[in-house]
Length: 124
Image (cartoon, rainbow, N blue to C red; front, side, top):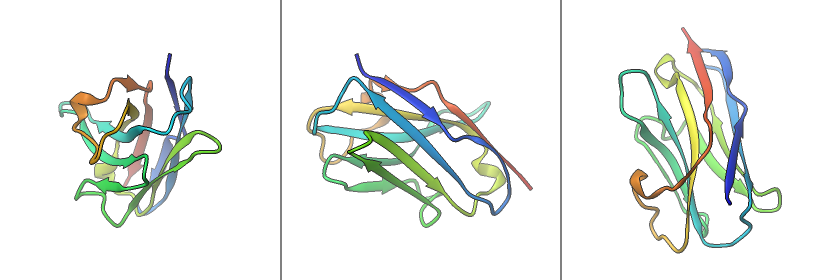
């Protein structure tokens, strides 16, 4: 059973940085897509960034140039480096995974493994 455990959320002032981590348990295979998604109250969950097993990445327009997704295959951990944070980045952030060969990474509905979420709060 695949389990995803996020950490690294917190509170930061506008312009600050945070790094989210997502440890992957129960899967060490080489075929997958993983991503970060976020949800704010009253809004639908939205995709933030994805990475496939070849290292190809994609980002939401709202975070391009500020956020970086990466994966350490030795530590089996997914990261999201968030710089130049804005109040509108405030949300619950979730990591997610879908196994198999996906090129490019699919839409949110295909992801079938989810972490519990970690809160990010950016104050102005």
